[in-house]
Length: 256
Image (cartoon, rainbow, N blue to C red; front, side):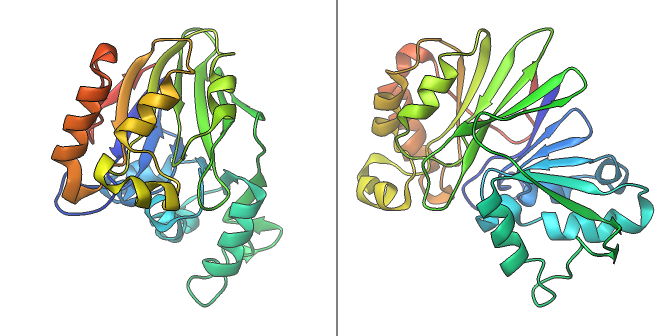
């Protein structure tokens, strides 16, 4: 299983700043931020499943455009997996005929371009030899992270957007072979108050959280706000130097 980083920034500001999206093999997206826009039409056509962590714009921005671009060229719907609260938000505020057409009834309700499938924490979705499991998260809106497992090898955990979440680390401590961890670190420590209000992690908070993790996977930090990348990165390395953390980059490919 290959996991390609299409975007991992907490904002915009250049051709290497794309918001959150991971492409798993050729047919699965985890989040649909602006990084999806760099895919070719042929690559977009291969996407069958989208797993959303939550409803914030930087994680869903390209979903409406994706389905609008490919639906007439596909013979099956794109399936969106997300917490029921997230799907309700999409119905009410995006696919509502005001912001965007409702592709769950286009071209008709019996053969739609888009299908919504609720997912709950702990639920496993098996797609061939790949297993996607929803992980607990603690964010300002209902949210999950995801565990991506290849039944024949290792696993990659993606926290999505989260603040302190004991349940997340409890879940990851049950994973037999956790090879990689992508953890958000949106704000520098100087913005600790803002981070807590928005339910994001800072370097110090991430360091505290990781004390609960029993495994020692390769650690990548993501979702840094563009105006604070240097400061946040420096603080991450100071706080977590013993774990040799790396800054996640657009274009990075994980072999899981």
